[in-house]
Image (cartoon, rainbow, N blue to C red; front, side):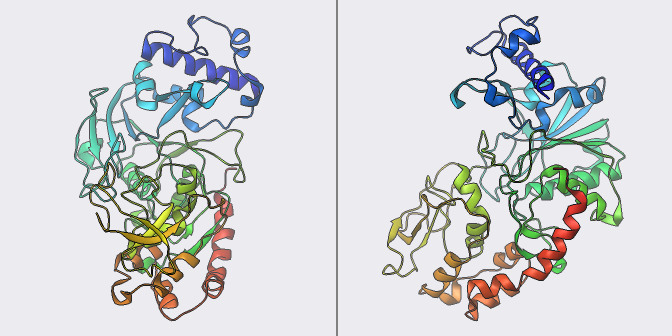
Length: 421
C-alpha cells in the first residue's frame, strides 16, 4: 500500500509540473526524474493512510483513456491532490480536467451538473452551455431542460468519466445527474468510469424512503434521505436495481477509494456547491434542507448557509437569534431577502449521526403563518406526503422516526449488496 501511495503521489507531482511549468511549493518536485525513494522523504508518516480518492488513482484508469475520445462529468470538486505538506495550507490540488489535459488525454467536452462546471450558480439556477475559460473546452449543462446527455452530444465520444463529490443526501442532485449519465451511457453503448469519492455523511442511514409516485430531480430512487453510499456504490445500486429506463444497465467501472470505510470522517477540500461551505453545513444539510420546502430560510444569503435558520414569521420569544439574508454568490435572491429573520444558530452544533426533526417541528409549532408554512416542494424533498401530515398532526420526533424504521431496515439489507467498503 505504501509503495502504491508513493507511486500515486509521484504521478500527481508530475501532473503539477506539466500543468504549472514550474515548482511553486516546498513539497513539489523540481526534477521530474526524481525517484520514489527521494519522494518518500517528502511525505509525512500521517499521509501513508490518507484516503485516496478515485481520481488520484491515476494508474488504475489512465490506460483506459489513452487514445480515446473522452467526455468528463465534473465540477469544481473534481480535484486531485498532487503534493503533500505538513499543513493543509501546503497541500496543492489540480483539477481533474486540467490534469488529464496536461497528460495529453483527448477530452472532447465537459458535462456540468447543477451549479455549473466551476460551481458558482445558485441552486435551481439555469446553467447555460458554453466554454471553460481555463481550458477552452466545450461545457454542456446537465441542469435545466437538458438533464441527460443527448445522442448528438455523445456521438463522438468513446468513454465517459464521472467525478462529482456527493454529500450523501437523496435530494442533492448530483446523484440524479449520475442516473441520467448512466442511462445515456447505456443507451448509446458508451462505457462509464466513476471515480469514487468518500461520502461525508456515509456514517449513517436515516429518513423516510421515497415513494416512487413522488419521484423528481431531487429524489429519483426509493432510498432514504440519507443513504450511506458513495457515488460508486450508488452507481452499482442504480445498475443492480435496474432503475434506469427500460431496465437498461450501463457498462460501469468504479475506480475505488483506498484507506476508506464508512466510519471515517472526511473533510472536503472545496465546497461541493455554493451553499455548503464547510463540514458542519454538510453534516446538517440532510436535516435543514427540509426548510427549503417551507417559508423558513436555511441560511442562504448569509455566511452560515445550512448552519442557521430563520423566518420573519417565527416567534421571537422562542427563537431569539436574528439575521437578515443578503444577495450573494450562490444566493442571488435568497428567501426573505433583506428581511429580519428570527431563528436558531447552529454554528456550534456537534456532529450528528441522524436527521434532526426537532428544529422543523419547533418552527412549525411557533410560526405565525402556519397556513403558508409548507409549500409543494416539501413533498418532493420528503419523497412522500406522510411527513408533512405527521408534523401538522402534532406527532413527536420519535413517533415520526419510528414510522421510518421498517423501510429503513429493508433498505439497509438491500444496500449491503452494493457496498465496496
